Length: 148
Image 1 (cartoon, rainbow, N blue to C red):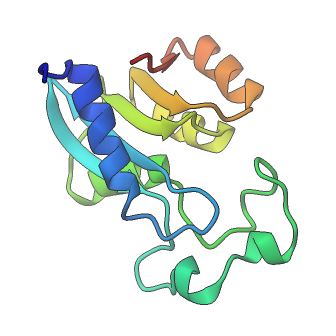
Image 2: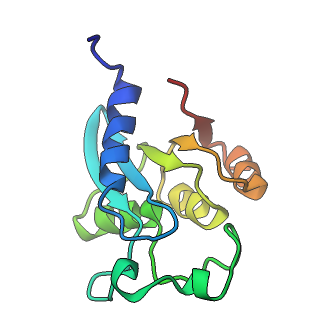
């Protein structure tokens, strides 16, 4: 067994973080890294103190909302948003950080990561959000697909 690259190591951790997700549709994990050290992690799920979807059911399924639409109609906070929230709660800056995420960020999350000072986002799974890529390009943030 060979030693994993740093990219593989952090992406593997993001996949492990995703196992904490309580979303019934898609489990997503994210890891913020600076200088090869983990700053914080996040997964998609209901905010603290709110009943999780695995207990209450999925409002998006009930309303038949397609993936990628009407993000505001969801109990969950996205993994990337939880990374930013965790960093803020603990007083950790994400300026210059790389975020590893198990799926391409949506437009809302890429804007949040840009505003938090993240320099690079490495994602594994595809998510059809062309506007997220356009905004990342204009903001000069590297948004790149992970290659094993």
